Image 1 (cartoon, one colour):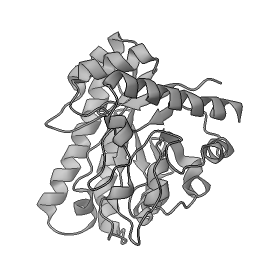
Image 2 (cartoon, helix red, strand yellow; image 1 turned 120 degrees about the vertical axis):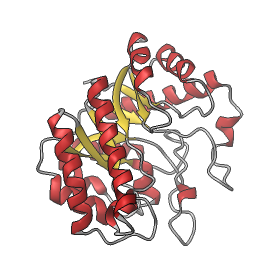
Image 3 (cartoon, rainbow, N blue to C red; image 1 turned 90 degrees about the vertical axis):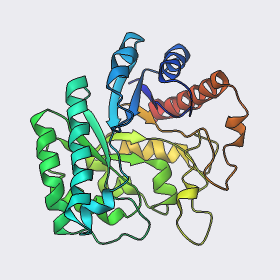
Length: 278
């Protein structure tokens, strides 16, 4: 087994997409995933990636507004978010990208999944199934929402789980989510951070550092992935810059684009060796 290495387009902020794709291909990555939004459609860049030999592993659906899907603050606001999810499915289908990553919630104070939110998500899941698109729901803030979504839709063949290792450390307080949801695992967002650093869970801790620069136990992550039978791509999600008022990523900002991508590849390859040898 030799898993492909996938990296997120946009990890090098303010660098043209074509340049990022070329750097990723030249450095040795096997594929990429794109964030999707109406004002930054990835569709034109998918053929560019493929011409460079990069597989497009997934599109990441927008997530600002996911709380509106669950909480009855107005049907119009919920409809806007759901329409974005449906449009992201359309892009997956049009670009022949088989996987869409979707957050279940946004917000640190939300802990009440409900029948209303599940009913609103049902047509999105069914719509994706019509086009052969799998939706992988990601662990973020509010594990209760992930649990509710997988309990409701996890038996459908086009629904799975995307493990974000950094979110698990800082948002989920290092609970072993693979032990709970590993049977649904179809994708990863691998990244590092320092865990929860204050009294409260905060977005500022979600630094998306390169592997081995934070406090993640990468040997244990590899073992946990194997324990649940995962043998897919090793997909990484990095952020080169700092979160507000933090300096965890200063080292990356001091590097050239080429140096940062090369270091990212070296760290991804280092974890692949651990994973392949587990």
